[in-house]
Image 1 (cartoon, protein in one colour):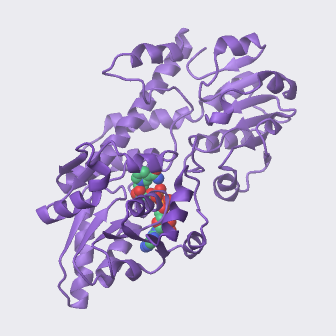
Image 2 (cartoon, rainbow, N blue to C red; image 1 turned 90 degrees about the vertical axis):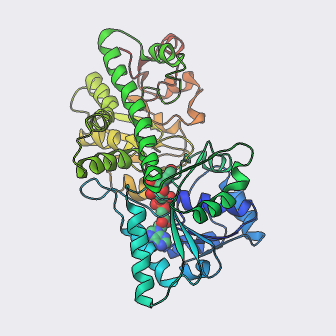
Length: 441
Ligand code: NAD
């Protein structure tokens, strides 16, 4: 099929590339000229494992191309994905200005029947707004062209996005006509034919499914963090409690790791947006509100432990931080707990030396830009030279099994704050460390 993908970020680039890998002809559109130029020259603007070779291969095969002009894609395509950002607006709701700007452009430029697929995470009822915007643009041109608007939320995980897209657990499609469902079945046939993984529903339920999924996952994380905070106060060990409850298959092991809070481009904004959607419809979402409150506080649990150990005034102290991205496998720094922890330490007079395998550029350029007393170093061990303590914030694989003797020799004193509960307490305390975890006194 000929496919246009508008918005070439984490979701759009993976979507476009994976469809091209299956032999479709894909045009990826972005308004960011620099990004498009880079992609045309084979430079991938994000870090996502396995993506780069697929992009290069499919560009060479002529299956994948990039442009800033939407009509370059729409002239040929049967389907157009909207995969632009839906950032948090000032009042906490999802800001639809990019989605509706693309809808308007589609209406202005489309020349033949089209299925418009909303892949961005959008509030319930957005497909109606997209439809009305396209229709208005067509009316202004005085033309009649058939189109359908479909909701097809994306569930990929950064760090495993290519695999998630290629082998989806499910593909959710919300549509209101059999014609649109037919096109969507054809589009996804290569990804879903092993198992019947296409789940069809009405548009609003599909839009809601994405928020419900993210809110459920965020709830599991906040729930476990709350249990961990209670564990610390009653002499229980959250690591053991996690295994104890995870073994119940009604609960399961995934997403119940205690930690320094969830971050990223999705959970914080989607939880907030869902709360707002409920509020706008006359319902106070008490559980969702608490999920967010617990997480807001959780981002400071590690800095609070540092303060409890070293005092309110941290001037004269240096901390070596391992990990900046919101999770391993990505350079994405959006809402990363590291931002909160580092700012809190620096605000109290500390110096921070930080290392991350992939996210230092993002941190330096955007999310921790201008933070004084923050130095970026080129290796994990360099971050610890003459530091008063080590703080682990992202569980990158290269941090999982470090040389503790080396760590001990580099630090002024063997103190380790672990925001991801990566190490065995027994082994590490045997090495002579003072070891602080989440959920263990
Ligand atoms: P992103 O910020 O990485 O990418 C968005 C891209 O859209 C940018 O490159 C931007 O320049 C481009 N853009 C904005 N306006 C445009 C326009 N008018 N025309 C063309 N391009 C335009 O965002 P993302 O992380 O890919 O997220 C996109 C959507 O997918 C969001 O709604 C997000 O909530 C959802 N989502 C994200 C993830 C994830 O892990 N990142 C997972 C599932 C769903």
